[in-house]
Image (cartoon, rainbow, N blue to C red):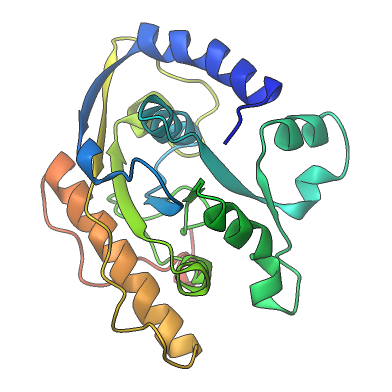
Length: 233
């Protein structure tokens, strides 16, 4: 992937600030493919955590392309930023789920890293474990055949918790990132793509992320993912 002006600009501005106000604890870099397309799947604990996992992958020579809703590509200045940074538009209103992910499949076939937050937003789980994810990640994995690398991160929520308006920059917090081996999805390959199959594959991916997160923060992930649709908060 050729890094454009906007992507490079964000990296040049953000990276020194991240290094100034945070420390790093990184592991599992050997699980990130050196070449070839792959899907990076991360948990979501803060609005700033894309910077943390993005820097992790960028430093490994695998600049990630994020999936972004198609509406962001319509009007400047956001249009300039997301297009210039080579983000991938996804039409969430498309009746054809495969067509909605076609640009992501093309990127993977071209050997790029596609980064997905399957939860869709920062977790609402009271203990900040991953919540119930959307199944697009499983559909993309099965459509493309690309490996799925789970990544857990812990620490960004200490700087900017969900719904917080002001970051807490001091004292310096440690940002922990751990990548794991690709998730085995062989049991789902070649089978009819049903909603049940997509849910099972997605849950398997997110359990891999949750298990990595437990290694970072301690504790035991809940057996069932928190479902924000059932929450009254």
